[in-house]
Length: 254
Length: 254
Image (cartoon, rainbow over all chains, first blue to last red; front, side, top):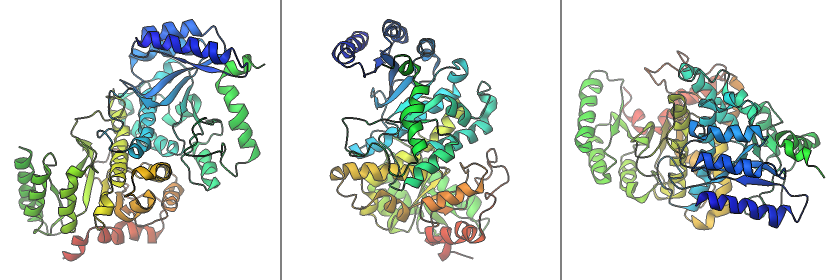
């Protein structure tokens, strides 16, 4: 059933949206429950260059680094399609690692953990060593947790690296080369200095991508970019980084 | 069985450790599976002032904010005992919110999520409003994730506060007043500036507590404090903050 749904959604988005506005691009929804079917769906949609990434949930049945999913990454890499990981759950596990939350506020705040767990899994299982051209984009993940997360992951990797010999360089380097994050909603305080400091901590201005989260407005209202960013950083976030991340955007530019 | 185990551990620690060295203090282990039994155990041990906190796991059966646990917090508050939340799981849920990890490195790096989920739960369920004198100490949680976590929690609280009207001020203020963290293992890079910046982000130098994690040495070796901290911050971390957090330390000072 997931296969039929995913195929129907992709056909619908192409016919009802992409065909009507040449400026639009879309993601390929895949039935990740069955990686072979997911690969079939990628192969079916990939010839249409208006599909620019493969979309999966932040919280599914297993951590995304597990070998069962590797054929999906092989297909995505082959077609120049980043894997977009979007907030959301298949609800096979509680949203937190300590059980079910009691309120929506708790659920929302806890969504970042799913993204953190997926990055940890993708890095420690060696996905990016196996697929050196694969890009992963975190969608609605928030951003400010990343530096501390990478410090921690680097530290535990240093202590336990004999267990994961295929992780042959510090996790922060792997993430910097392969992972991109969208800036909506932005989990930073109003102080614009914090965003600049995050970019400095990441030692990279290539990781952030413009996003609006349209039509959601409940967190950042109409402010699509934080105040006070320098013009060259805005240029990176809004133009340079997206074109680097999504090669199909450049190929199909009108 | 948990009740018998917890009682036996507490008796053993008093007899074999506290009785032998007047410098030592201990935590009360409780059978949290049954909050009424946990309260009984607190009442039984609390008259011995060498017990200075109540110890629970970072990852149990339910988020710690849930109402079922409130009698435990009432007992702890009554006796001036902080709740110490220590890394570890009862393994009723996977260590990550996306399923079971494949490696120990992944497990270790993911432990911070349990602490994040517990803080979210304690704040959003209103525990600190109900128990204004309650302190919570995170043990082996890491530290550097806290500022970004609080920015996120503040933000989602602002968006969703009608759902949790009992959270009547920003989460970062609640956490600053009620929560303390130990500094081992420290999930910061070697740059000492980062620790100072974290303290600045927290807008508080009262939250960090000295710890050695003895006999574990696999992450920080013999370095019990990060290099380059100013003397007054060390004084706060090693002396002032612990005495503030654990009133029984002061009462029972030899």
